[in-house]
Length: 476
Image (cartoon, rainbow, N blue to C red):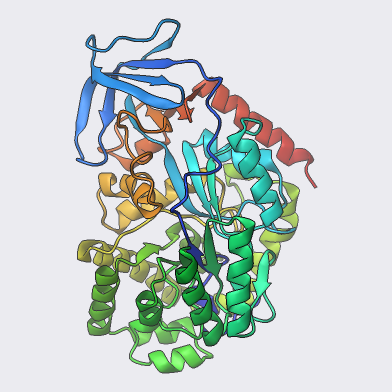
């Protein structure tokens, strides 16, 4: 995974485009799910930030049918009644940057790649670049109830330069290629367009214009040939991994764009006044940020974090452990982590500081992890790490929770159906043993998940993870 010029600030994702105006596709079927009633539960209202104690929440036909004070709501005959004293109900979580079928780097195993999301309360994902045939099939099977997995919005192949670096990429050499690939992907049924780092300027702006003409969103990396300010002004809806952001805060932005460059140069030439102007632009243009802090920390500190005893490794198939992870680590150490460790540690702190600065300036955020393409980034599990890093950066637990619940619904244009525990919305929910607003780590304390109305208690989630572990052991 050689990365040159500005690409060292652009991990495996890409600057893609997204159109989320269509109905939510890939929604797990709920037609066979029996009614469920949670009694005496505390509902976490992510919109207001309040908590509603001692509530009854009724789920029927895949939707939240009723919410009311305990004793004031009638439960349907035959409903499964769950005594939820002392427990907290939150909306289902979203990981807004994943790769679940990525050539031979992330082989298409629906159990290993999808089930851990559900077991961790992640009921929706934004798939940021992968094998389109596989993803379309998985989305269809999830919707039909044939496959257990989160609802999916998908990009398919990423738009990259003439010689793409990654699997699941579409080469773009010029403006004509940019327009053609956008047209082809839109016709294939993608939800948005994803752009990678090496796409040329004319290809990028042509793809952006064509996406706007077709009414499909574009998101992803800020390409090496583009300024972050240009991408924001062009209407790129989200920027991943802070690509281009710190170059835009540098007194030598022109030199950094032309390359080559080092991380040390980026750190040394950071200008707070330039940063303030760029942050104000992102807020004004409402350019969403998906910093993938868990991936960034793992990348820049890969030689300083001991992962040899990571218990989550038991969920990693041989393809990840023996091929993808060593390939990533070798490339990172050769081409990216070339500055002294203190410089890289300082940069990781700069990313946390930028998160806090942007958030307080009104820049909107989404939680994303870049799973499963990175080293020791795991479907579902790493989303909780991302929320904890948001809090470490200075967000409140409520604000961190919103980056994976209410904010994804708003970003996707699906706030009427998703993102909060509200009557009439799709029943994607997580039942917690502890209060997540007092400590974001409590979002890991999952007692049950409701996926499009289907109730999955802790024992069933544990059984699901046991199946993943067994499958990982025998995978090739």
